[in-house]
Amino acid sequence: MTRGLGVASLSGGIRETANARYLAPPLAVLGVLAGSCLGLLGVLFDSRLLRLGFLAPAGYLALIIGGSVATGQPMSAAARLRLPAGVGGDASLLGCGLPHWLPACSSVTI
Image (cartoon, rainbow, N blue to C red; front, side, top):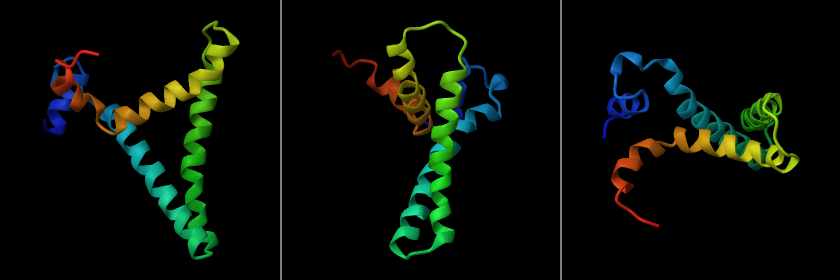
């Protein structure tokens, strides 16, 4: 499946409704991955500049936790603790292309 078809499937099959917001999850995944790699290289080569790469995953984590805290829906304390993992996991899977795999896996029963 091409990227265009994936975006069309996410937007209800209508290409005209697809817009730049569908690029946010893949760009977030790439930013976190690139920042993590740069940060690790900074640790290996003792470079302060490269260690700044760790700001990307830390910033993403802060946004996920902040967004989870800001939700105004009443929920239990246990659900509030699990919410950041669910939101971060969903966004990461979407950024990695999970919707592309769903049609191929639709016949699988668990």
